[in-house]
Each structure stands twice: as C-alpha cells, then as structure tokens.
Image 1: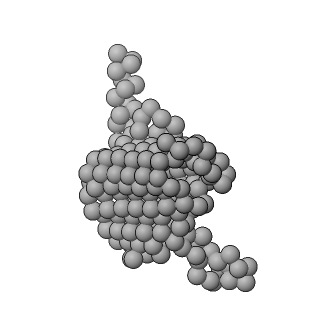
Image 2: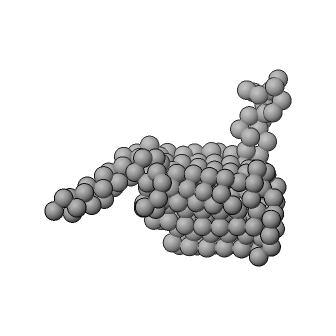
Image 3: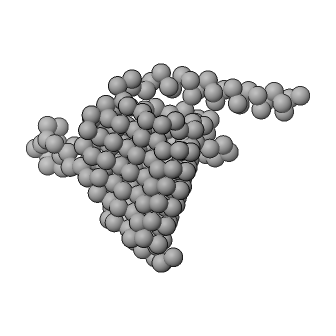
Length: 192
C-alpha cells in the first residue's frame, strides 16, 4: 500500500509542478506543435518554438527530475528554435536563442543539464558591456546526434549528422558528420 501511495504521490506531484511552471511561461511566445512534457519547463521570449512530432522534454528516472526545471527561450520576435522529429531531451536543459536560430535535427538525444546558447548576451568590449549589441550566431545540430550530459554548445556551432558529443564537453567549433568529440574545448577523438 505504501509503495502505491508513493508512486501516486510522485506522479501527481510532478504534474502539479508542470502545471505551476506553465504559468511562468510567456504568453507572447509562439509555440507550434505539442511536445511531450515530463518535467516542468518554462518557455520565455517573443519568438517562435517549433516542435515537430514526438519531441520529449524530461525523463524519469534521471537526475533533477523532481527538483529542477527546463528553460527554453526565443528572446526576440525574430528568434526561432526548431526541434526535429523524435527528439529526446533529458532534464534541466537550457536553450536560449537571441538574434538568430537554433535548430535540432531529427532523432537527436540530448542529456541532462545541457546548455545550448547562440549569444554572448553582452558585448565583450568592456566599454560596451552593458550597452553594446551582443554577438550572436545560429546553431545547427544535425540528425541522429547524441549530446551527453552537462555539455555546453556555444554560438555559431554546427554539429554534423550521427556525431556524439561526450559528457561535460564545451563545443566552440564546428563538428563534422560521423565523429566523436570530447573535452573543453571539444576535439574530435574518433570517426564513426
């Protein structure tokens, strides 16, 4: 009986969290498609989020399922984030587009605590840091890519089809098709 009660409590506790965090999302953001939402998520910004078929956000059992939230923001009206078909995203992802596009290809797997950000958000020039226009560049992640946990993908990066990005890597340069890249910064260690 206690096991059944715990299972029901966890299930409904998570549904309540998802419901509560949905109120923190912006009503001005345009969301196209219906992702499968398993973890609380906040959608922010004035841009567009496009979800193709069978995009799942969150997974149990996995780290931070009950304790954290995912955050996806298309900051300005011209910003777009596109999720391909059959994309699986683990818990506590942060994806932010400012002045550009982020596209995630079909059949892509993304681990927990991944950050995909296409902007510096502030000028690197110290005299313009709070007033300057930040550098931004599009991010493209190909089809059938596997991105491990705690990976950071920075502005202007393209990751080729079938590639694997190892755990805790920081991707600052393009990664070609069919290879494994790891490290800070990520470097190719093997072809597939």
